[in-house]
Amino acid sequence: MKDRQGNDKGTQYRSGIYYYDESQAEAAHASVKAAPKVLGLKPWQKVYVEVKKAATFFDAEDTHQQYLSEKGGRKGKPQATFKNCCDSIRCYG
Image (tube, rainbow, N blue to C red):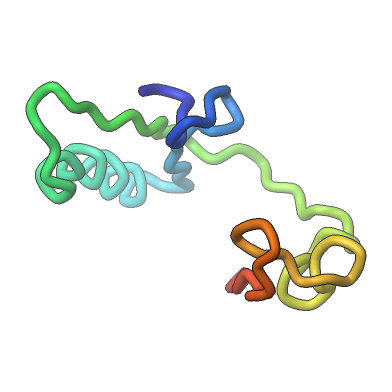
């Protein structure tokens, strides 16, 4: 479904590919077209991915840069994937 990731719904869960030039646009459209076969979807299952020209990008404030990997997440503690988990989330940004 559009604007959904699992049970989470809303425009903030929209999947998207944003391009800067025509070669990236062509690659994005080809990727979306190939996705159902690559993912092994049934004919009635659809892939919803917004493909648009990238808008101006603004860096987040310094306090949000490398939030998980360098700043340790919330209150200096590593964030985890489930309640009471002590494993850190890895951030490659």
